[in-house]
Length: 427
Image (cartoon, rainbow, N blue to C red; front, side):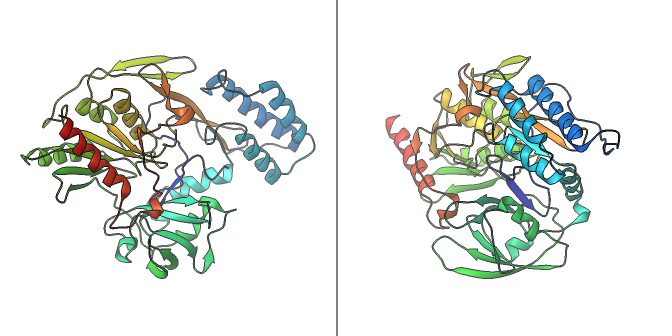
């Protein structure tokens, strides 16, 4: 399985690999497969069985892949090319490698092949009682020296107690460096049985590397909305977590209430830079709070649904100046929200290009016990912009990687402050 579909996030100690580009986006219909772990029987050869599995994948793609007709794939050529490879005679490992190669024929992360073993491992890891972790959300970075960057830390977790913070990077686990070929699977070396220890080689931006020993534990917490009133600015700040809770909308409302109590209040910065898939991002509530009249299309191969946002003012939310911070880790529902704000010219979007990971995925069981995950639905803002193709491009570009931002200096936030203050002067 491709271990890095666009931006893959790992929750060390609470969930398995997040393989849905945008879990939480409603798909059309119920495509969840019923479990069937029955291995193939002896009545057909391995090559015939692999051929059947590949034909199953192609059939599911034709029925469900949202870009089946609009994409650039030459389906007849792909069909024959991969059948020829299968007919050469492949073992199970070689067939898995071939299906990983097949994933690469499409935009990154839109087609994901999951083996039976990977599926079982993911199901097992989803059970909190089975393993422990350190309580951090990380993302693999391949550029320069391979490492993982910490996006967020769960309060009270072993990671927090050990002094790890957002923006830190991990270059080695128990003395062995993070390897390019293992990619995000390095998470398997960081996770482990509760009560055991792991030593990480960590670097905070602007500082030297250091060794940090952490005792793993069962992780039962989750990150919350970070809320601040930025010093000496009268500007509110909200950082949306990587994986939120169902109370996130209430937390946003409470923050707006607090900000509105400041008579000198100038506006709010909404930081979406680590708001990844499965974040419980309250899309409908956020759209209603800050926008009015914007149209959003949800579409699949067979259906198209349009809804219009009906604004609801809460603590002045419809009129307050807003700046949204986005980046390479922004994906899913938060990405759609940022695009809607940009399309309606309601606020300024600042940062770098987003992931374009907004598709809803459907999972289909295969006869070999594996699964194929297919991008089956997507969003279109204002009837034109398809985020799944190119991602969101901010009006104000500020290139600052998450692992380059120090605890005391964040150029993206600084630009947002300047943009809101400029809006106030114009008014």
